[in-house]
Length: 164
Image 1 (cartoon, helix red, strand yellow):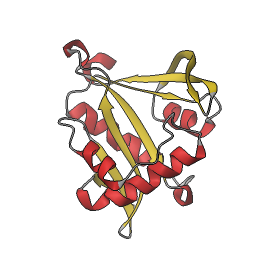
Image 2 (image 1 turned 180 degrees about the vertical axis):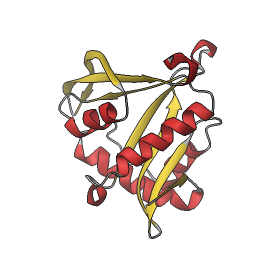
Image 3 (image 1 turned 30 degrees about the vertical axis):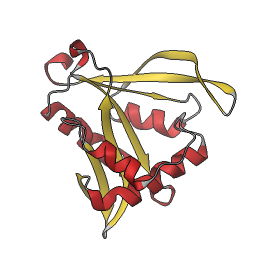
């Protein structure tokens, strides 16, 4: 398996994987399916890594860091996401992506990555723990999904000199 930076030719595969996550209603509050153009627009956020895992020329998953806030004080904090195609789950793709994302984020000057997961998303929570994240709390009734209030578990990991 190869972990590498995303590129425009990956947009269709990345959109398909993300849309799978949207349709499953287990990992995001998003409800509108995304196009390849939507996803490609996210590729170019300066200083924010966006990686794909590929095997035999086929994209198996992706991991990215999105801005946490526009405020300068939070420029070293990013919110990460990891999505793996259904057929590739349970094979270490997510862990490989997240470990490489941590290295790349630190290299680019991030001092903290965080994310939110639905409490019942055991796979996402286990992946975060396996990669050194700690659960720091629950945001109750964070947002509605399909008309139903949903909680999220907040995870974080310090990087670089912040981790010392």
